[in-house]
Length: 122
Image 1 (cartoon, helix red, strand yellow):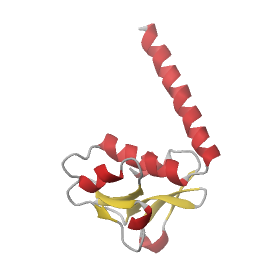
Image 2 (cartoon, helix red, strand yellow; image 1 turned 90 degrees about the vertical axis):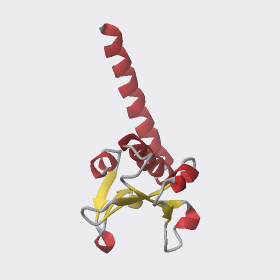
Image 3 (cartoon, one colour; image 1 turned 135 degrees about the vertical axis):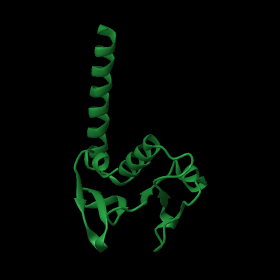
Image 4 (tube, one colour; image 1 turned 135 degrees about the horizontal axis):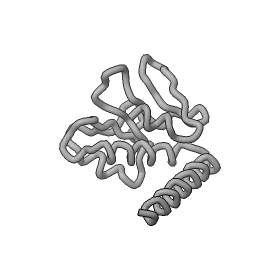
C-alpha cells in the first residue's frame, strides 16, 4: 500500500510517532503503522460504512474517528488489494487540495485513453 500511496501526485513519506505515513502537501492521508503493520488508517466518506463493516475495522482513536478516519485490517474477508487501493485513493482525494486532485484526474484520464487506444489496436 505504501508504494501505491506514494505514487499519487505530490505524495511523500514521513515517520511521525514511529509510524509510516503518506502525506500530500504536508497533510496525512494514510497511516500505515510501524513496519510490518497489519492495519492501516484512512479517511473515508463514501466507503466509510463499508470499511466499518469489515471484521476488525474500527473508528480511529484520538478523536479522528469522528472526522471519518477508519482503521482497517489489511487482511480480512472482503478486503482485496483493489479495495485497499480504492480506500487509499479516496482518503487522498479527501485530504489533497482540489488542484492536486485535478492532477490525479488528468493523469488517470490520460492513462485510461492510452489503455483504450492500445486495446483497440489489437
